Amino acid sequence: MENVADYKEIVDVINDSGGDGFKYCYQCGLCDTVCPWNRVIRFSMRKIVRQATFGMTEIESDEMWRCTTCGRCPQRCPRGVKIVEAGTALRRIATEYGVFPEPVKPIRSISASLVGEGNPLNEERKKRGEWAKGLSVNTYAEGMELLYFSGCYLAYDPRLKKVAAATAAILNKAGVEYGILGSKENCCGESIRKTGDEALFKRLARENIKTFVDNGVKKVLVSSPHCYHTFKNEYPEFMVNFEVVHITRYVYELIQAGRLEIKGAYGKRVTYHDPCYLGRHNGIYDEPRETLKKIPGLTLVEMVDAFEDSLCCGGGGGRIWMETPKGERFSDLRLAQAVDVNAEVLATSCPYCIANFEDSRLLLKDSDALEIKDVTEIIQEVI
Ligand code: SF4
Ligand code: SF4
Image (cartoon, rainbow, N blue to C red; front, side, top):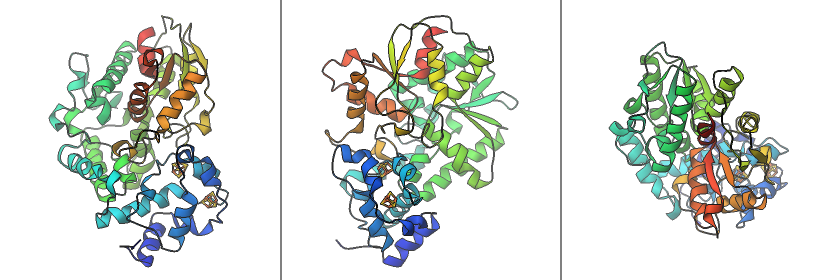
């Protein structure tokens, strides 16, 4: 296959992205043994790494777009190769040349929507705060305890709006002084960055940072692990530092501080799915579980792949916007794992996971036997 980018450019872009650890790869293949793709098809990150080392990446191939940036292989790589960063660097070259293989083509319209309306769902910017209507949610004002940043999917997606509403109910019950900025907010930009569109990420990030500074924001509460990751670990690249807290940790803190009381019971068998960007990428494993364990009647059971070994839902790295054929969806495998432990509820705390799991649930023989819930939706029922 012909290369549109030459050797030197590929190697330079990888080096600039901190992915130069490629050269330390000694082709052990451990990355391939843990990659979730190898549960559904044959896929070799080891081969992509090898080709990139020699500047031989096939930019036109859809192989390098498969990585969901789940973080499993860098965790295991004995040579410390920055596999996610290097993979993103390769996509950056393809994005610059406008080379999008068929399954990746939706990214073009996603980018247009992000530029025009600040969200990937082609929804109107002015409607971003409408989810909060009638829920006693104020507009953020300087001096409030925190800004609640719902993220795009919780603001617009009909299923996920219920998670935003559950969050508002929890915050109201605990007497938290918070507000939202509605149409003034943009997508956080995390996922478009992982597709290689660095320029668009920077644009979204700069606009959000300006909004936060202009409105005197000091602490941001988020529901999406993707917002959490980029606000906490990537926005500091712009020399800003505001406190970021994920809702699972915040709810746990509210309970510990006696600000939120669990009054009801939840008599169901629940299993918890660690989202990649909350667990592996940011080390938050315990708080959601500890919170669930405090609920009377709830039985918490673990799936075979849990904590650091959690099975990716398939939605990271921009894959949420790409078509994944039936038979290749990790979320189908994850639901089978939840069914295997006789769970009645698969709980998690990420909009991409919930969207993928709800899709997979429809394919279950008895789809009513397993509910998909955000942790906040369970808490809402017992406070
Ligand atoms: S695990 Fe690391 S060293 Fe081994 S093949 Fe993969 S990238 Fe190379
Ligand atoms: S980050 Fe995850 S999806 Fe990407 S190559 Fe590694 S194991 Fe596979």
